[in-house]
Length: 150
Image: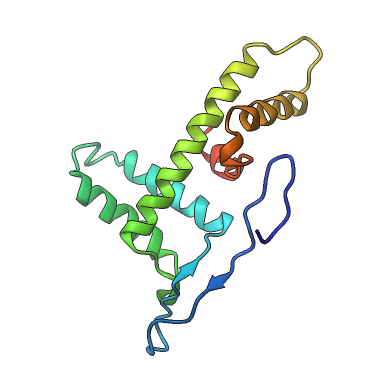
């Protein structure tokens, strides 16, 4: 894995794997391009903005909703780095699942917040609990997304 690991975890450095699958110079279709933290944040922001749409609320059908999330996400992305619907839904599913797990760890540890503990102490406990409960999934890599949700 590229990148370093810390108590909060870190996302691997962006890397392209494989060869371009198109000759069009305006469109680079790599077989696999890793997501950056900034892209994660933009995706969560696009999802939240569509979820909080004051006009259409939650009356959108699933396909329409996700098309709008993709359009919002890709509106801030250069043409050669636009993401497809499937990739966006897959990543959002991973983010949502792991952030939900982390929220469970946060709720459990904050209920046991001892007098004199700082926010940093509490966060360290939360991260340790998360890692204990999700050993096979690795450290929590979406703190930057959790910050947006909370």
